[in-house]
Image (tube, rainbow over all chains, first blue to last red; front, top):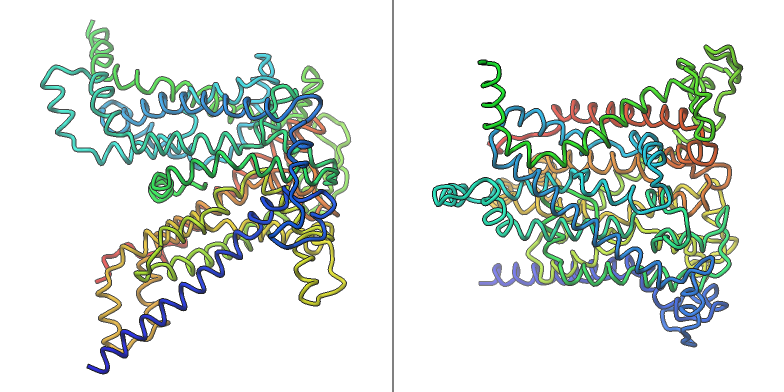
Amino acid sequence: MEPVNNMKTKVVVRHTLTHLFVITLGLFMIYPVIWMIVSSFKPNNMIFSDPGLLPKTVTIENYISGWKGYAGTSFGRFFANSLLMCIVAIIGNLITCSMAAYAFARLKFAGRDFWFAVMMITLMLPAHVTIVPRYILFNTFGWVGSYLPILVPKFLATDAFFIFLLVQFIRSLPKELDEAAIIDGCGKWGVFFRIILPLATPALVTTALFTFLWTWDDFFNHLLYLTRPEIFSVSRALRTFVGDAGAVSNWGGALAMATLSMVPTFILFFALQKYFVQGISTTGIKG
Amino acid sequence: MSKVSGVARFIKRNGAAYAFLTPWLLGFFVLTFYPMAYSLWLGFTNYDFTQPDSTQWIGVGNYLKMFGPVFGLSEFTASTGEAMRVDPYYMKSLSVTFNYVFISVPLKLIFALAIAMLLNQNLRGVPFYRAVYYIPTLLGGSVAIAVLWRKLFEKDGLVNGLLSTFGFTDLPGWITNPEYALWTLILLSVWQFGSSMIIFLAGLKQIPEEYYDAASVDGANNVQQFFAITIPLLSPVILFNLVIQMIGAFQAFTQAYIIGGGRGGVLNSTLFYTLHLYIQGWTYHEMGYASAMAWVLLLVIGALTAMVFKSSDFWVSYGTGE
């Protein structure tokens, strides 16, 4: 009996040590984020000097000064702008990416392998190689300074990641269901709306989730196209706290608004955690 | 007649599928294919956004502007007969980006694999730990974190505050010191190892426990098991993570932009390739040059990805482990 007991003790010790190590490292890793949240409630002059997590004085002054925003537009407006953009982007991606995915995953047609290969190549393409002509194009349409350059592409299924994710998911669904529906008189559109879409709900949630995060956190496109303060997104507005060459005058306000900007992300993350894991492990998308 | 019925038959057979594909096809042609062809052409012109009407074909002028310094050029004559100056910062941006990619990606993958292996031993609470370790990745790409990072690594920032409580003195301003500035960005990237970790964790779960048991019976120690079982069986996943992270790292922009306040930092020490491209295209309106830069980026990423795949013949095994 003794060797077995010994081994058990060994495993318990090893697991305890691992727990301790993982917890310590985890705390170390999220310490900056926690510090940021705490510091946003500290008076502006104490943020610099105090690495501690317990503020000596709690104030919401930073939130009041940060909320004022930029050039007379408040953060309330920026949050509304970002939210609206995300909702429209989600609608666009859900409709058009699922349509393309259904065609690739389920329909037989001439040129399918070719177009699928093309789609997979666009997945790897760096955005920069199209960004200049797109900018020139959108500028001739008079769209620079509006949401259209950011939102119209979502209705043209340009986020190939989601097509790929949905193709993978739809392929895993049993084909017999489509066949049964066709025998019952369903057309291709009927199969799409009545069978595929309802069954693909988990993958559609993942698509919506990542569309939200990417649109919310995107900066490059917002920098290019959202040129007026009234239409700034949250991420574009946060940049206004950082002056040229990186000087920041209102650190308190910057940290307060940065903290607020993460609230939607956190809520979605904790509410929909399993969809994150699914999305990442099926396509390797970066969060 | 047979031709007409052929077309009709094609539509009958394929029409529905192409109807489903229409948005994507439209997007592909209008927003990807046409822009790519257009930017390839722009790359051989002196297109200036503020005066597009005076656009001229300048042959490889933009490419000489980039790589001229390699051949010791500082000025050259373009095919239009105009004198052009080389870009003194291009090679700098290229080397900053290479340093960033080749240091941050391996570090990130090593870290991700180490933590994934730590979590892959039937521990309790793995989903919770996984979530905690994913938080930096969840937030890391945002402007908010870039702003925070500036604050952390300033001369009187949090990091120095902590270090001084441990007795360190004469600490530099990490972000304003050209020797360390890039390292703060590398650290920011490595900090976001969460999605690679999740993918490794899923891969590790696929390796049958029996392999390790059999190896233990044969007297293999942990290190031997790691190199003989874990690495070979995980190699497809390593390849996947490597390619994804490498392509992503070449395109990093937001962090460098915010931390440098829209510029390349002190002595251009954080002048990422994409940041330089943005400054050329949108600050100086030299969109022909920016397009040429984008094509070089595409070729660099393409060549490196191809090399990684080519090398995978030697280190990636898709076997069943027999």
